[in-house]
Image (cartoon, rainbow, N blue to C red):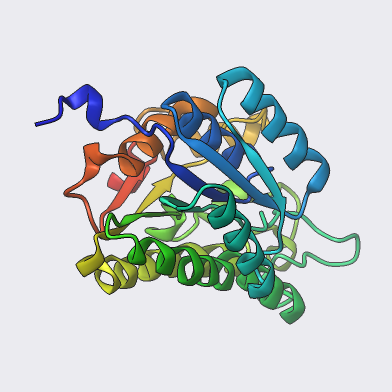
Length: 277
């Protein structure tokens, strides 16, 4: 029987991380690397993706590769799969993290984030990355995991807003009429709720091949947001604050390792308690 400490070991595990050039993707990669895994960053941002992969490889003394990849294009995902199988022979972990972060703002003419103004083109683009991309990556990499005899892990990055509705009051601006108030766009909720549905579907799809799937629902990360916004949001969170960028790394290691070998189909809130109120 392995010790608890050994069960967290990710040595030589190949972990594909979509949206790897972003802030959360980078943190997921650091967590994987710290426990001996090999992070594989996928993103359309070639400059930052390359820089971050190089830094992680040097800092953690592990291989860390970057692939310029559009997750809405299955042919590009298949190319990544082929290179990984050729270079490493296996794929063990997929973290579906890629997303277009919709901003609560206007475009100079009207508040485009509002439901009545939201462009259908924007809807299609965001869903293609956040949901279709997750499905395509799960199909390609999950299938490979199912062939090995050892299985693997799919981890979907949802949100606290995949469980609850956004509280649009925290975005309100004084002096603006109701129909011009900024809001969290509809796409964010739909995508994050959809990822939970995808998680439950995948949790049983390849389970006979030991491919497990779970999801985390993180809250917002503090990045020097507006003080008025922070004051409103903090009142909704029992811990009274947003998360720090490193506070999700522990759950990433846990769910991607054998320490979570009996967790499957779980939807885990990590939101300072926000969804308990």
